[in-house]
Image (tube, rainbow, N blue to C red; front, top):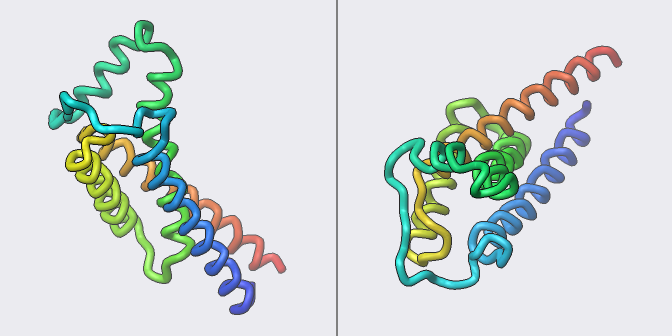
Length: 154
């Protein structure tokens, strides 16, 4: 891939990243589907790691498949694009940087939810979201390796 093509891919990555961030803000702060349309009187939060994850697994039959999937896998999947796009858009990338940036963004979202009382502050969400960012980075590395092998063959 020549420099012009690399710049185009990076620019596309940056545009997709901005669109993803807009989607993320809407989904985490304003989505009616997940009860983000108003504040609650009795605010709930979780400061015990694995408490909510364990609860969702233990009560999976009572809560239903959608609720369990949305909480456990949804929290991971929603941040996979973040890890991927931040790696595409950045010149300086790396595993630890992705972990750090994913954690900071997730923590920021949870703090926002804490102060606005939209959603709930949950350390398990921070863990799952950060894991999603890391998986996005791994996906980027796999795609990048495939691209480089393809470029070498040309």
